[in-house]
Length: 80
Image (cartoon, rainbow, N blue to C red; front, side, top):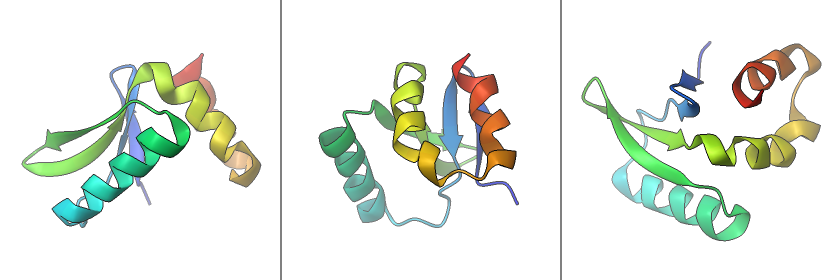
């Protein structure tokens, strides 16, 4: 299962099934509640949520307590 990946220096979240209103709500939440720099990108004619490189460390601190130890390497490669 792959729900996201490194994309350039940022992080791409596979949100292909979301409706445009879902994107607007999620982007607003991530920006307003967590001060993350987030944008909507097109990837092969499908929308994906993009977390900019300068927000990855903040994102890690938000989710680190919920990550399974076997998944920590995904962030280590991205934020180092």
